[in-house]
Image 1 (cartoon, rainbow, N blue to C red):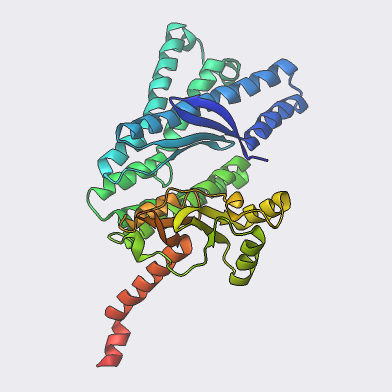
Image 2: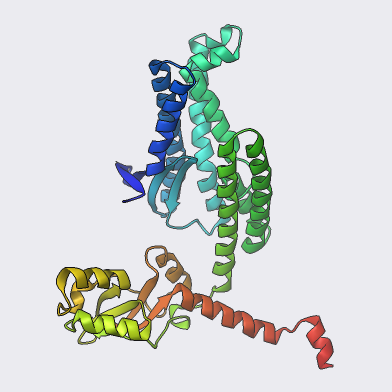
Length: 369
């Protein structure tokens, strides 16, 4: 069962809805009914949630369309119970570009909020005495309030919120990106603790938001640190050159035996030296069950990546790891290596060890004297 439902495309970007979002709508509807509200009021609550997430989609589109101006594609936009997520292929390395991509989402909310305010003003809504009951009865005023909340919440200067990215981009103009990210991420973790604490007393959804912020801040800090550590390295510096591979016409039984005996879960398939694809362990088992032991190896190929050049920047390999855990390294149509997250991590570990040996700690220097 897929975790997300594809709702179609908008500006050429896949729009998806996480299945848990449906449970949110059901929860809102039943909660209204059980609290004594009428069926009409329950429907109004659901309509408000849907309208709110339309605002979220427009917010994420702001990021996506601004990123497109800088040649960065958006893989998809996914609706989650705690908001939306636009998956950009990457964030701009230029701090100024990152600033505009990050600020574009809140800017959309600012424009929508201004339009809603003007519309309510022209309708004379603000001429009457204000009350919370009046706020609850007017859907447009609710949307204006929600829009202002989205604008202010996303501008909290805590990574990975938009405000955190804005802060990181401004700091990066004056300092190293790794340090800038670390500062923004630490502020994000601090904000997560405060939001989580508030969630225990006021709203459990804030606890989920706090977890999202904490994990996102740590993940981004780790990612930037990794990017900095592999700067200047090429794919060939971290690829594995010792691995097992099979010919396309070999039997699936022989592939299974090779996988079991070697412990290799990703088996490259070639034909006369030319790379065809990669068999994964689960794909191999499925093919054995479906086709039998004597079926050819190429029938179980599940990954057919284009492959990476050995001289490509190692950071390109990291980007490709988002799609599959293993990538072939191809030169002149020939498979010359495999690259995985583990091989990249091992290269980073070795480089760090070499760096530490060349720059001993003060205690080690003292011992050497």
